[in-house]
Image 1: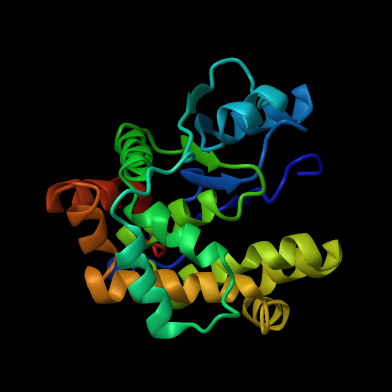
Image 2: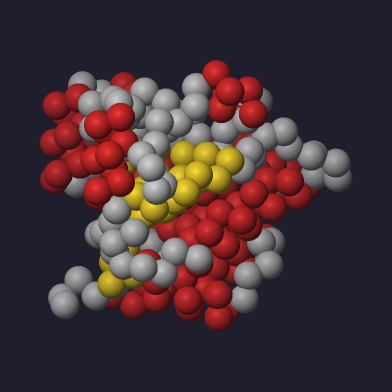
Length: 253
């Protein structure tokens, strides 16, 4: 969509038990403030049901989303983070895997995964997902660029749905290609498979180290994303089964 920022559908990503994410159910993006009213109506017709805005109060005030009537809007600011008691734990992970040249954003990513305030925000995002049972109705979650706060949310959701690690990584790193590759190249990658383009765009990118830091924390402290969602966000195994039932579909049916 011409006036959108990093807007993409997560439908058809491979997931648990040979299923895929259902189309018209999960969207991620950057700010929706540049949409025209016609764009907003198109998204509503596409199935947009709920928008979860992860930006700060000041970002929302400066650039409010443009939404069509009937779309439910939820403002859940990830920032500011409440970092008390987290610095030492996060520091151990960073020192174990990265030298002094590491992207400082990696620390922010780990804080978003462990910070009590951020955990409450992502917990509410999952609750909204569980409250969206109708087929063909989309939940769209976004921040400003659709990269950091949205990227963490996408990793959590995709991980909970059993999306393979390689696909989670590719979806996260695809943002670099969206912003820095020519538009025609991005569109071709989205149609034919983004792996080659993503790898080329991110071979030496700082953002790759953020992903590695996140994966290390999840693997070492929780084992995998489903256990993270249960232990850190407080959802049950039944909740995860319900989430998969709502958002996954058999590609052969």
